[in-house]
Image (cartoon, rainbow, N blue to C red; front, top):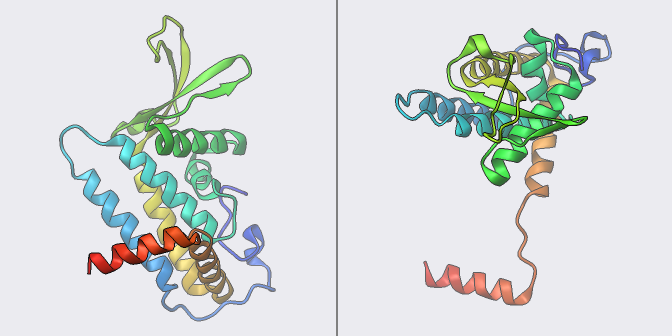
Length: 216
């Protein structure tokens, strides 16, 4: 995916005449709700003055980017990569690995996962309001094991600003492109159905029914 590519049904093919467009209107309600939740929650986190929860910010940015990617029928890391590639020209393999280290590491062990590159292990360093260090590499003993390793900085203030810009661009694209808007809504419904928790065992259904009755 080209870093400067516009949104469209066919990715970089959006400019082709086969993509239908319409007069600007409201984007899908599903996008509006997702965007509002993401922006409100991240904005409130940014207001915290002490003991900055940079890991919480990083995880929310990662999963919000993944949700947008899935709703656009793209690979899960695509919108996270867009945040890194558009201005900073981060190669796709690097961006993909950074996404996995942040998303999977924080979701499962609440720490960024190491990235194994050949014989080396790269540390992902989550920074709070250090824009000059964003995507810079610094070598030091990050793991306090007496071994120097490269660490890649991801600055949360920078990623927040880039996410806001990305959401504005996507909102405009959804307003102007009817086919893209329908695609977003269709994919969101598929995702909601896919991740619905289904209770199917008779004993489990009975337990749920009793729970609902007792707590009503």
